Image (cartoon, rainbow, N blue to C red; front, top):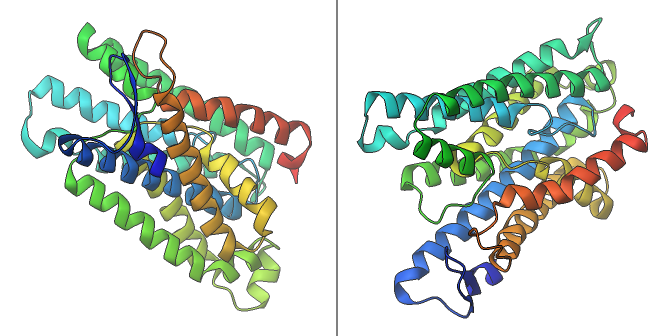
Length: 310
């Protein structure tokens, strides 16, 4: 986070700067740090909740289609704003459409990923990929339906970015939701530990499994969707960070939630720092490219080692 405050490259990429920003630029870099840290922590927590909820180490918002569903909701809202010529606060109110799209997608994947009343890890991932593709087709439809100038703006947003300006309401809601989710997940760490053993074992010790799962479902989907509304779809953070934290802290979810949140901050803010130093003559590289370079091989490794079936 300190490096993100100190390292900066202008949008046209003429010179890499290192040092405390000028007075007029401080708030932009601080906003980028806060957004990056919040998005990383939210995705890390969301991935942890999904992996515990679905008992699937391959579960994460991007792979299960939540990010694509939220992106489709945001894209539909952006299209409506453009077509209707809306201005003011409503022109930037994309959080609600993102949450609706993300939760609806998660509900569809959860329902179709069951076999004889039980969640099948492989089917869950396959359904997530297919639903994500369908949402992607919807996104491309809205991209095609707008003017060329706006189409390029949509494309850049879909690659993932950490904005340096964001509405105070959206940022406050995202930060507050992430802190609330972290506090609840830490408090319910023991219940999530018990829930991973199986439904019968969980109920035998008095755990209200349905209530816990509903809250995990709602929080995981809402966290992932709000990050899409703020920063666009950023993939694989929710997959890599819980596994990285688990290697250091072990499987207990109370500590794992905090570790995954910190790992998410490192991954997202670190990627935002790294992209400042890379200039190919076309502006700063989208952050989603960096996270895909890290998360893609990690996903393949988990799949090939058989952990996705555990």
